[in-house]
Image 1 (cartoon, rainbow, N blue to C red):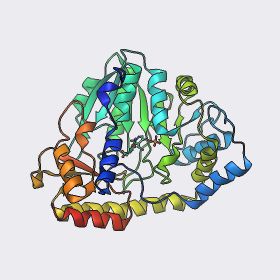
Image 2 (cartoon, rainbow, N blue to C red):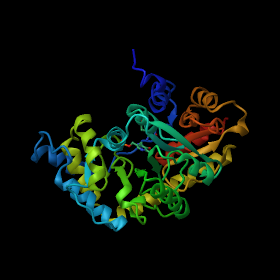
Image 3 (cartoon, rainbow, N blue to C red):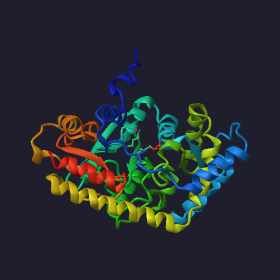
Image 4 (cartoon, helix red, strand yellow):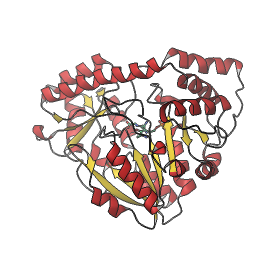
Length: 380
Ligand code: PMP
Ligand code: GLN
């Protein structure tokens, strides 16, 4: 029997859709993993580490070369000089960093504010910690939040707000006004901002604003990210939490018992990755921009209504022009009859049902795959 804590959540939608895609030999635009492998210089660094470095337990908080690479990169993008020893914790992906944050900082009965549609790990992490969640909806088609709803979500019991920008699944990149309002409320209510920045380098003509660098926010921000999306190595599960010492301490309290540490070779590889030349990040953005345009134009031409995302690598398209029912019904039809897999976004909504007319497509796929999927969908 599954415990009461996990039973309500069932299997993750990504596992379910990936299995269905395989069963029906559908082109998989569901789970967000690239259809190519990561850069050779990064893989080589991990292979060298297996050959010449220790293969025993690395330090629980991360190997110094990775902690330092994380600091140097963070200084470059945020202007903040941080301490690798007491302000950086290496984790097994952003997923573990999220779990360690919820478990380490939240007491049962505390409240956590989540924007919905919400990445699936947040509500489950809150449930593990015994938190009560308050949802604030990002309303389509532009996926902005309502200021009054956000203000109403803050209260004396609020401990954390999770800010995922660039946002999965809407592709929103929160603008300066939105970030300023969130930060103002965090300061007013003494709330910690947890930022999930795994898509930090995948933006399209928008600036990625870092909460930690906003006035008065360093002291109350936990910045989470990972290597998976930026370096097309989603299987490496190497991430980190950057936070002032007083917020790093509770994260570490949980991390040391969750996983204790993260595989050594991937830490060496990740350190090499973060020292990539600036051109790497520019090329990554350009590559995803052209894939985004290919998919958005193609979806429109086969009959969807779709807005181009500002960041990340997903498109939320409106499937109502096809009249095939809810998102779950639409995705079932898409996989079994058309041969294309996608994610039904209603699973990302908890306080409203605004996801049922949408479908999420991932475009971290080679052009041939995207074109073939569009070709199949012309039969919708
Ligand atoms: N946060 C968001 C918003 C994601 O889309 C994902 C999926 N990769 C994660 C966290 C998990 O990151 P990781 O694979 O590093 O655990
Ligand atoms: N982040 C990936 C997505 O949104 C899923 C990762 C996972 O399966 N946990 O597609």
